[in-house]
Image 1: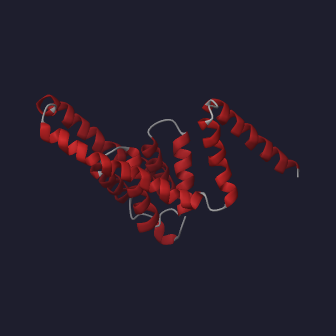
Image 2: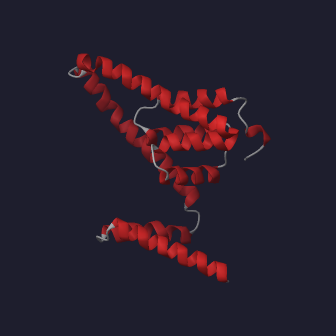
Image 3: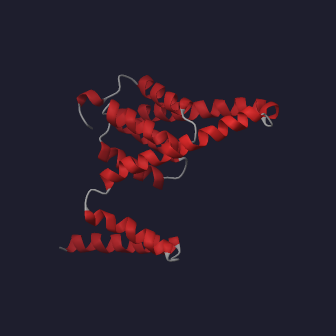
Length: 185
């Protein structure tokens, strides 16, 4: 935890923050990441940038929707089980209600030219919102030259046609070898 002032005043605060982010972000979970990072890392100091990177990594490896996993993990980190439930509900309820509303009115608006134009106008902003956290978090994750080797090697292997499953299995084998070697030394 970053400091004593990092705790939310209540689980309601967690719910409202994730509800606000979920309600006003267009483009899905990746588009929400910069807003979550700004709220929980920069604005409220609930978690450090390194902790956020760890949460992001864990959340991507967990089954389910990545941003829901991020919210739940952040909620648990700062306020335990109730915080996890509050952040989860704050993230899930707005899109659920939105989908119900859109589904109800879809037949009325599906051929509307203005709706199609609005969605086409939003698309470049969504792409920028997806790229922002990648750039921001990569600066922290790739702090030295050694940490650049792994993503460069993986990209190279995949670009030269190596099946991703073999790249993943090779990475696991290397990690196991390093861990076992450190355990002996």
